Length: 230
Image 1 (cartoon, helix red, strand yellow):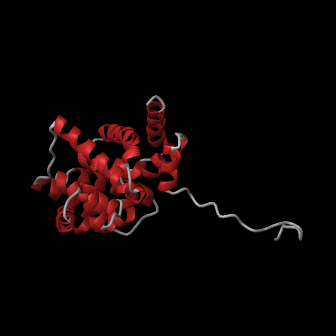
Image 2: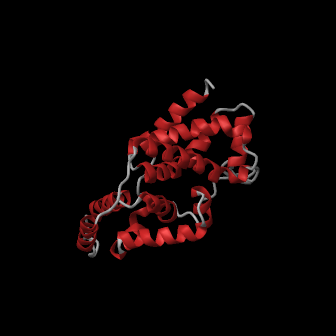
């Protein structure tokens, strides 16, 4: 049903979201609120990247927060706004690696753990039931647990390629490694997780290590409070 009158202007105005470049320029011009838009846009990717390195939710949240504060201070030095996403991710990667070295953490998957993954995933390889939501949550938890157990160098590549769906080139740029290395590590990571998990990664992968709601709000609030005094 058309509710417009013959005298009304029915032309729709496009309301496209602001680009990183425009938000960055607003921040440089003194509009701190624009930085909130930047954070909400990049929160999940940065959290997943940090989480893949430090292997701990609380540590990853701290990494993301420090990344935004550091990026805010260094924003005037950013010349190419088109490279902002990679630039920001590199700051997060370096912050996470610094924390990892400080805590001297290293996690690998042994044969017994890998066999356990294969057994559990094989048990899950059945037609979806009416209570598939619960099954999906169990599969998601299975994936998350075993991504955490990947060797450090494989885990970051896997998180960016499989979960964040970054290209080989973008992953290489963020991690500052060769594209051939990205391909090799991604292949080996998938082999470790076994083919039985691949179908579940497609179903639940995009929700692995989600970063939304209260956690996202908390990061934004904390960073906004800190940068307002810089």
